[in-house]
Image (cartoon, rainbow, N blue to C red):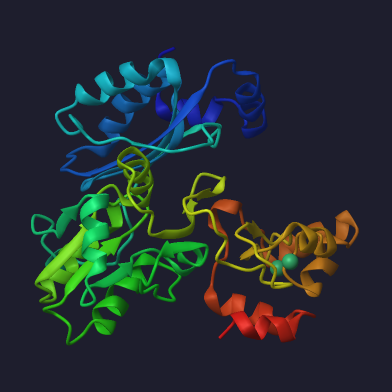
Length: 361
Ligand SMILES: [Zn+2]
Ligand SMILES: [Zn+2]
């Protein structure tokens, strides 16, 4: 079992095979996410060391390694959770790194992907835009709830538009952006003149707030706070301590499941008919691949596409489709198109145009 990571990626099981294997497993998997900003001098070497340990423990997932740290979404066999903890603690870099345990869906990953990146979160900032040693104050769920009570507090959702549309904190500012990179300057601009106010930031697991809070402090904001452990851990704390849940709707997750319910309500609507819906799908026309909200009825009716134009494409004979994709390209579901602009166009093309106007401003 001494394959290197590269051999594994090259010669390991195909995705289909891996999915079959996963189906036959007789044990549970625990969804674990973790991140840490920490100096990793040689990410390539680190990848080999992590890969060997993780493969041995049967871990799957998607992991980013960079000189600035680690960001991992994984699934760990339940019976190996203690060994996984010990393994991570055996590295100086990751000793004691907090695990965020997901609520459902341990089977979200079928392979182990460890990518070397420039940054563990793409933020477009240069090293002079922030000081990662000077981040916002970390608040527990209880402290976050209490701070939200005050009228003067500004709550900001540091995630993208397609994430916050299906769930967010009551009264939060949810910027209309496609990427974190766009969001940082936009938030700073929107909060201009409010540098002395209490600012509460939150994101999925806390990683984006580390950067965002350092950035806002660098921009002159004095009272910057962040939800420790993000929405994932908020849910656990609320349950454990019997706190009031102030998060409405669902938490968008990146591991193929789409969402994890936090509040009991559905706060978003199907982009095509307007019925209550928090289900993201990718348009079945692979050249479009738009990420949007579609209810099950519309999925049937539209064959999983975003528009009549895309529906026509998937109804073409296979040969014609191949030709079409050759010309227009086909995206994978990892690189979906999530442009707000495209989504607004979707509203105009749709036969349900009138209803759409309500949602597409
Ligand atoms: Zn619908
Ligand atoms: Zn489409």
